[in-house]
Structures are given as C-alpha cells and as structure tokens.
Image 1: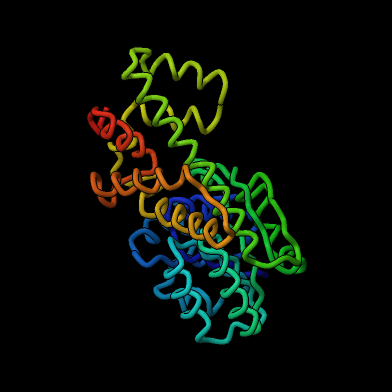
Image 2: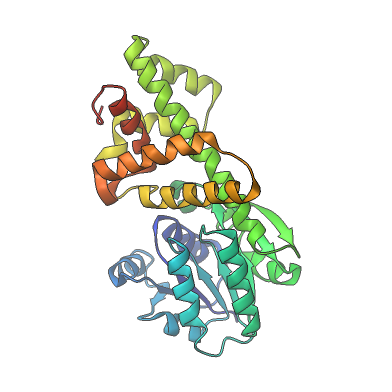
Length: 303
C-alpha cells in the first residue's frame, strides 16, 4: 500500500489533489500540507475527509512513500526540500510539479538522489479549470524507472497526456515548461493589443471576439472572454498571479540570455506585468496585461 502526500495547495495543487482522491485508486487518504493551514483544512472538508492535514513538511514526508510538491517559486521549493531532507528519505519518491528554473530542478534532483530517494521533475501545463477536470499535460523528466513509478497518478487521473523525457536531465522538464509558458504570455499580450486596437479603431471588441471564436478556439477564447468581461480585475484571487507570471518571464529571459538568444516580445510583456503589479498589487492576474495595454493607449485600465 502506497502512501501519498501533497505539499503546496495553490489553484493547481487543489485541483490535482481532488483528482488523485477521485480517480487515483488510492488505498489510503492523501496527506496534505500547505503553509497557510486554512487552505488545507478547507480542502479536507470539501473532499469529505479523504485527505489528512499535516501540520509540518516533516510530518507530511515522514509517513509517505511518494511526495508531490507544487509551490510558487524557486525559493519555496528549495526551502521545502531542504526541510524534507532533514530526515531519512531513503526509498521515497519526490515529484515536483513547480515551475522553476531548470538549474533549480537539476539541483533538487542531485540533493534528493544523494539522500537515497528518487526524483521526477513534473511541471504541468494547463489552467486551474483544467487541473480541476484532470485535463493537464504533465512533463516528466528523470530516470525511466522513477517516471514509471509515478505515471499511474498522471494519465486519466490528474492529466490527459504526458510528455516524457526518460533518462534525460531533470531540468529538461522545467526548461520546456518555462519556454512553453512564453507561448501563453505571448497569447495574452496579442489578445490585449488586439482588443485595445479594436476598441480604439471603432471595430469593437465584440466583433474581434467573433474572429477569435472562429479561428482560435480554446485558450484564446477563454482569455478573450476574461478581458471583455472584466474578469481580469474583478477577481479576489487571481487565476494566474502576476508575481508568478513575472517569475516565469524572468526565467525565460535569463535562459534566452544565457543561450545567446533574444525574446523581444517578452521584454515588452515584462513591463506590462510590472504595470499590472503596480495597479493591482497581489490581486493582479496575467490577463491584467489587457488593462496595462489599455492604459498606455489612453484608455482606463478597467473596461
């Protein structure tokens, strides 16, 4: 019987835990831990006590065979793993779903395996709604045997598909994730600019949206709706927090620089994210790029 634990309950983590409980064929409740305990308690109540709330990282790791982590940034995952490795972890499997710098991921793998445990890097692509519905895409990197050990919890459980890099460096998973996330922020920037020009030129956002629905179904339509409806500034809790977006863009720009490449679009996006942060603070969402583009074009941040 395998005991799972989950550390980090952001928008994505909560959805993944829900699907592990509902579709993971587990024989034990999942042990969950979050720095803000109320979030873990609320999830436990929602899942009919099919999870057990731990009070510390050490408690979550101690009794577990497989430990999933999904936290906000590089500092948080380093702190989490450093805490976990203060005890005997020999034979345990750590799976990190966080979006961090590839060098951070490689360093995690080194520390974890030197402590006698296994490691799989497993960042995920998808929005919180996709996490809730088990429709994420997992990117798996590490020893093939370790990937096989954790795959039963991916396809048809938390994910609709996997992208696998067996026996490749752990950082390849987060390298793909960081580059992949630039496609998302570029999509948001393109939509923001398009809707702003449509409004200022007299075409109107509603007419542009018809084109988007016809040509680019899926995420484009979802973000276009969020922009038109003002969802990007009305939310109490962002779907994709501006601070996380800035972290991802920063990693991408650093990787491009280290590789001798340029990502000119990201340089403009980075400034728009700074503007979102200044206007909305921690409530800022990546879709708030629309507000930033509107503001620099002489319109109100809010629609």
